[in-house]
Length: 304
Image 1 (tube, rainbow, N blue to C red):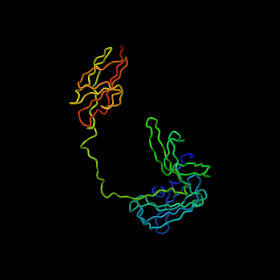
Image 2: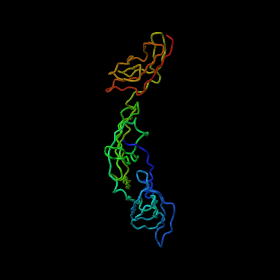
Image 3: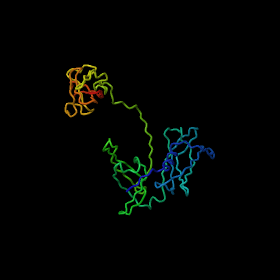
Image 4: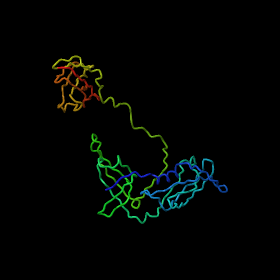
């Protein structure tokens, strides 16, 4: 059974720092070369241990923001004994052409010797050890029947909601270790030559799908056996006012909680107890029938 834990994302911070963040420590250039900046970080494996191996960094030709030309090239960096990463690179923030990035490929020493494992695990959200599972989470896999005990990374999560009331979902976790599938980012530059053309129109607003709620409805009289109601507005032509004892089942196909349908603005409702509540919506004669989107609640608490 997998045991899920949050993995501190230091592996990604190295790659992102190289590609996106402006280096902060300038290093004097030799001769006429560009001014370099020192990048220092630590690379960790998926199980949280310091990585061993090399990183191949490559870049295209570009001009720095300071106007210094950088020729295309590559640099191989050997990670230190504790996963230390140290490289000197020209800053690409504000470089020309825009969208100039460094690419880093990591080759870790033990990728080729560890067994490759991949699989999937179904689980209901009630049994998750943490609040949620997302790709890049670390999972501890233990399957004695297969002789499997390893750390893997969640690569993909399929989610199906089965109960909104209970906040219950079914998860299908797809996981693998680095030997089966490397974990990496790929960045690409995309330029939109023309603004996107909107495909939406506002000629028929969504509000036209519903009738206004009965916000002016009120109880005008209460006696022992019935109450008198004023809906506040006259019913739509060919339509009426639908009244139910609970807020649900609206429409002609459900009469379980129906108190009545009325074609007049004022009408009487039966009173069966000291505390009585009724829900009101208006409807029209269109096909399909339009109803108010929200219900009006009339609440009576009066001695019999």
